[in-house]
Image (cartoon, rainbow, N blue to C red; front, side):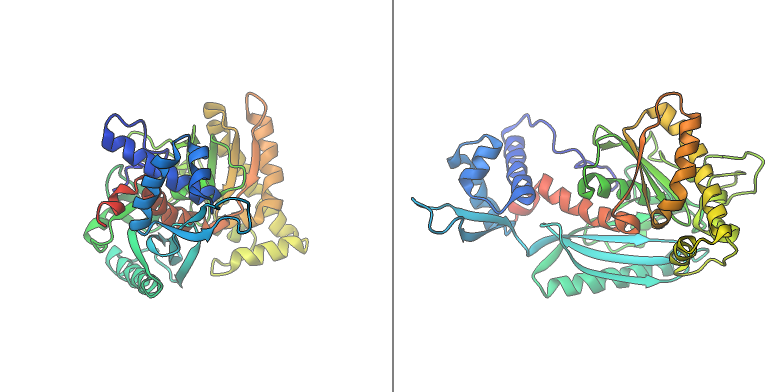
Length: 397
């Protein structure tokens, strides 16, 4: 299901079981973020007694979620504590991405390390969901099998899709660039491991929140590729909207009388700043590796490419103006494949925001995750679920 129960922690417990769950989560998150460390260091960090932490740690070690590495500082005066680290085996997150021109999967362990990855370049535009999901499932099974040989097993599978996903469901209501409508992926994906389906921009924003360098708690994440999606993060949580459809930046009209869009509208941002639109304006045919070619030509001073990117940046600035004026975010983060073109997109984008926003324009940064954001966000979505609620694993040991 897509309900983001773990995006901002487990909340305030009101039962003994809730308190235990929260404390197990605090231990896991502390060691995952700052370990290896001793029991005493964990106790000091989270404000519990060493005896209470030892009980929690013993439970997590038995569950295979933590491992003891031996003395923390050999040679220290007195008895050294045993250093604890998040286990490199056991439960792991499996992420998958359905793109217009590719499929990708990866396995991330509880330490946050990508252990296995598989990708297939294939045009999915206009393909029926069944063969696309069959190909994706084969890639998922490939990385799960590889992970299993190293002692990892899937705690869940999260799938990023370029379209509208109904809140708390596995249904893709509309994915214009895939030409999918009302597609229940729950009927097509394997029942095990547990499955989550979410919009690719949402998962890219979560990756930025969790993995980005100095990511603020309030920002707009723009996923700019063949389609252009966005996600809004407010106080460290996704703003999903009533139906889960918030963030459709690519279908904000920038020139209302402009060319028709696959969504049914006219003059949408994607028609001026999507990857294929930029390539056409630069005189290039769409295809694999074309964004890299755009970057090379831009770096070489190709004036037609510069013009295409300048106009795309202007269109993005127009579309983002309403969002910035309405929400007043700390920053806008540019991600996706087109983030590679930031040196030539940002000047006109920033100029348009400066000209149109009511107050001082917010800062614009470029994601270091680039096009990997949605896939990493999907896998880390599962990892965070385990860190937020280790009881689901521990109670089965």
